[in-house]
Length: 267
Image (cartoon, rainbow, N blue to C red; front, side, top):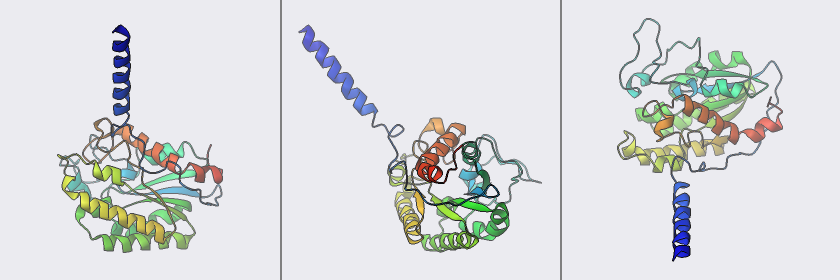
C-alpha cells in the first residue's frame, strides 16, 4: 500500500508538470524560432533600422511620452496614440528592442519607432527618416494602428507593398515584423478589448503572410509570444513593460539568428 501511494503521488506530480508546461505564458512560439538566413551585405557605414510603431519605439504607459507643447497623455493608451504621430524622438528608450538588439550586433541599430503611426504615416516619412541612416536591413513593423483604426486590409496591403518597394529601391533588405500570430489571436482573453476582433486579427495576419510571400520576405510571427496576455510582461492592454520589450528582442533575435550569423553581424 505504501509503495502504491508513492507511485500514485509520482504519477500525479508528473501529470501536474505536463499540464503546467502547456500554460499559454510558458509555451514555445507557434512558429520555428530560427527563420532561414538571408544575405545582407553591409559595411561599417551602414545600419539596421527598426522602423515601426509604438511597439518598436518602446512605449510604456506608466511613462507617458511628452509631446512638445502638449501635456502628458493620461487617457486610455490606445485612443490618443492613434492620433499622435509627432512625438519627440530625440531620445528613444534604452529598454526598447532596437537598443537591446544593438548591444548584440556589430552593425549600428537605429530605433525609428513612431507612436500611433499607420502605414500611410510610414509612407509619408520613410525617405526622410530612414534613408539618411543608410540601412542595409530594415525591420519593418507596421499595421497595428491600421487594424485598431479599422482601415481595410486591402489598403494596408497596398501601403505595405509600397513601403517595401521603396526600401528595396534604396537597396535595403527588409524583414517583416508581425505583432500577431494565430496562437496569440486564439488566446485573447475574453475580457480584453480586442476579444471581439479575433476574426479581424486572423484576416490581418493572413494579409501579412501574403505580403511576405509576394515580396519574398522573412516574416517574424513570434515577436510577441510569451508577452501578450501575460500580466508580468505588459504595461497596459497593448504595450509591453520593460520585461516585455526584453522578451520581444529575444524573440526577434532568435528568429533572425541565422541571418545575423551568416552575415557576421554578431558581436
